[in-house]
Length: 99
Image 1: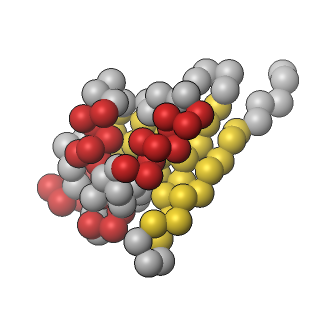
Image 2: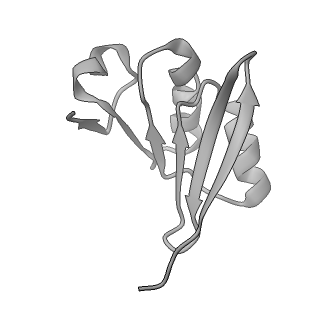
C-alpha cells in the first residue's frame, strides 16, 4: 500500500484561534476543522483550487462554528460532522457522531 500525504494548512483567526484545513490529493477530500470564520477558509481554498467536502466540529463555541453557515452556502455539497449529544447547539449536521 502506498503512503499518502495529507496537506495541512493552519489559518490564524480572531485573536487566539486557528482553523485547520486538511487535504488528501488522492481522493480530493478537503476537511475544515472548527471554522470560526468562513472568509479566510474560502480564500485559502480558492487560492489552491480546492473544494470543501467536509466540516468537522469539535464543540459548540461560536469561535469554532461561526463560519459554518457561510461555508455551507459556498460549498452546498460539503458534509458537516459533530457530536450527536451536542447537536442542539451546533449548526445542522449531515452526520451526527457518537462518542
